[in-house]
Length: 278
Image 1 (cartoon, one colour):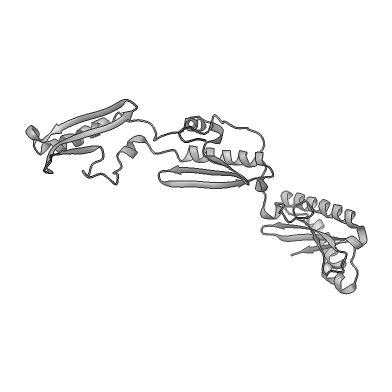
Image 2 (cartoon, rainbow, N blue to C red):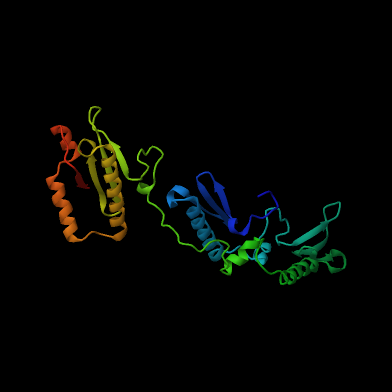
């Protein structure tokens, strides 16, 4: 949004990018930053929902500093040793008086002067005491966005629909993917080989499961379709947890009986499918 115009509540702290959304909020000098790509969440809509959820979490858990706490923090250009207390200097550099000044709200500034003439050294102590009294009138948080209070109260400014889980890197369809489906790839051991379609899925802590479908056996389109179906099956098993002992034993037996693409390269032929557990 143009400078001076707050972002809409739903987009507070969220910045659209060509690949998705960037969330950036600064709290007490600490930048809270996270990226939400549309490829990682399946769509631009889902990426925005996740970005908004994380933004709301930061707003609720790390609110802006209180205005009084910020006003009590010494600034770099402070020369008196006390925030909000200033001195009046004579042309010769001698202190003529002390002033306590506090900005409370637009159009409301508290200010009291204490001249050295008549008060002597007590002028500084009186200005410090007055500054402390003025701070008692300062309430609220530092520069809150209009949307923050609503977010902290749980009044969401965005949809409550279902959230798609973040995809692993292996589930993201890359630009160089020729199948249009993540985890499904076309392989050719050498230039003269008709090739095969491979479905492959990695699960953290469990390793990689893959299965190949030869073009020579199934034909190009059928082999590709079988690989896509196998990939869907692998993802379902990944989401559902570990397979049953019987299914695991069946996969191991199939792996032992059927040749891999590397074996097929040596033999000059390829079986209908090969399962590999790494």
